[in-house]
Length: 275
Image (tube, rainbow, N blue to C red; front, side, top):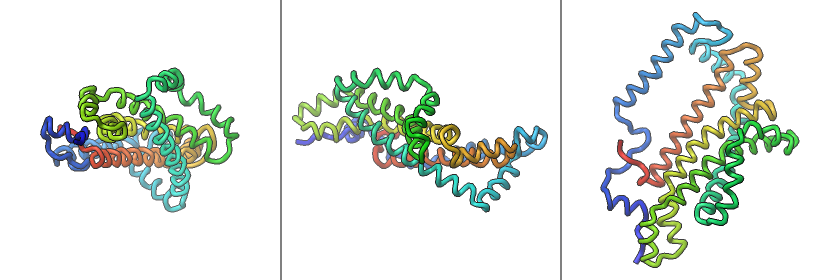
């Protein structure tokens, strides 16, 4: 006799409709979102020219600067440099954070060994450790920037995964043990599925922190990528061009958040709830 998976248990306990895909919001929801964005852009465009151009430029000028940076190739080169560092750092943070979170969540000894270090490092502002990382890697290549992204991103993943594993419903574990399930089946059918909401929450938090780490590393470790464009155009008072990489980073973060929500709805549909 096999043990039902966590998602199957939840579905039997309380029938719910199939999880909607992340983009399937009600038309009224999309209208409110679009109206909010258009209203802010309209007010910005209307009153932007009245402000000091050194502080703020209207959206129309930022759009023209975006076209210029695309045409001369600066934005494309900077995006490749930044996304290479971001992708490598986030991948390492995901692998290490989920692995350590699962192991420490199930092993009391490992939890007690890691907890003081996790608490200490998470309490220290990550920016304060960036110069140490730069010196350790001798300011050479992408390695210090990747390590900075890992430092910023790993703790939300690790801590949320750890808490997800430690907060598995004891009743589910008792049911699994009553069926004499193996440890491997226990992990695959109960522990990991039950921890999925925590894991995906950690990943969403890590995306924002990883983007911050990427920009901070490009400010402090080596002038490259989108952070380099921000510094250059801020120093030359080209605020319209300075806003372009900022908006690109924000748009990239929104897109990644949506992708994570989509993957969550496909991999773990039981974590989704109708609003």
